[in-house]
Amino acid sequence: MPGVKYPESVLQGRRGTQAQSGQPHSEAPRWGISTHDAAQMLGVSVRSARTMLNRQKAKYRLVARSGRCACMYWDRRVVERMLARRMPLVRKVPDKLCSAKEACCILLVGRSSLSRYVTSRLLTEHKVRLVTERGVRLYSYFLRAEVRKLAARRNAARVKAEAARRERLMQVWNEQQTQADNS
Image 1 (tube, rainbow, N blue to C red):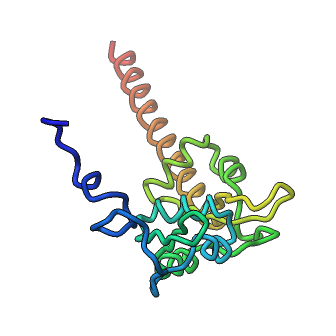
Image 2: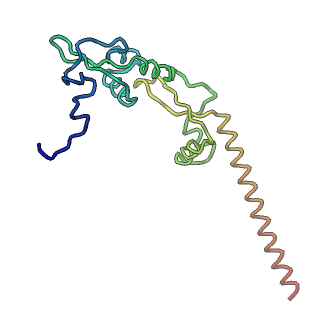
Image 3: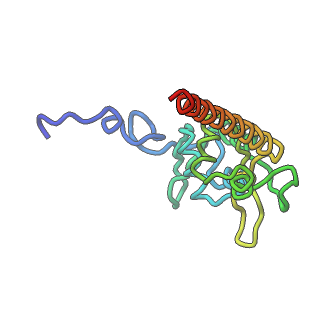
């Protein structure tokens, strides 16, 4: 259309295709790994693997296969890096960790305060991949010792503030008593 300016990505064709023709490549790259193989390595479905790799902005190449649809080959290094950062599967949570619900009970706060402590780095959140009856789930846990230490600090600050408040009230009461005695 005259007068319409298309983005460079549209003018060059789809991402992962040959730059000149815009068609899929004819052979798989040496640096690549198919989506199916990446999904098997990561232990997820093909769709989840593609979503995860797209989030990582991984480089990929479309390769045409005879009689079938094109296959995506992803950068192997990105898949290996994702695999290295992944937490191992556990069937039972270690005793040194406590759930978010337990942490809230220990600290006597709500979930929003707990997340505020995490963002302000007063607590560190540990993600655990837990095998449950419904499949593998990712849960947040906290070090029990760290939660108790923060609770003790908060309690000490609360006690100190309460003592200061009582001291101020006693000063005001003493001043009122001296004024009453003088009059």
